[in-house]
Image 1 (cartoon, rainbow, N blue to C red):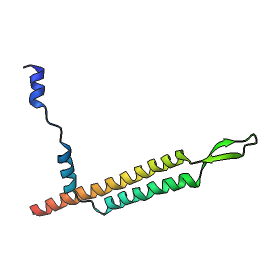
Image 2: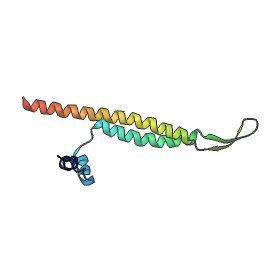
Image 3: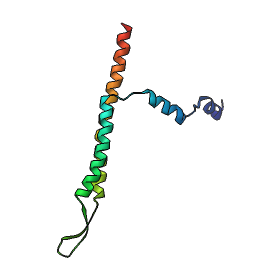
Image 4: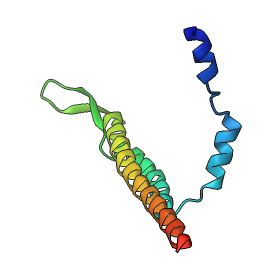
Amino acid sequence: MDLFDQIDKEKEELPKLRHITQEMQKQKLNGYQIIAVVTFIVLFIVGIILGNLFPACEASSLFGTCTKRQFNLSLTIFFWFASFLVCVFYYALGHLIFLLSSINEKLTKRK
């Protein structure tokens, strides 16, 4: 058998964007997932505020004093990344609880 014929036979279509959005709309978020999304939005704003509260020194004089301050982008990006990781883990915990509860519902229906 020709390799290209076998590839054509076993090839599957990639899911369309409309199909993906319909599948995502069927899933309801539980409390952990909602808290994770809201927390990320709040921490995103807090990252901007922290970058402004703790400015970085752009130019310093001969004696080491800061003459010009600017927005601390590195602190903001670090805070965004850390908050993203925390919120993703919390969201995953909520998804894991959702999966375990759905398995439990299916097991109790069998009895």
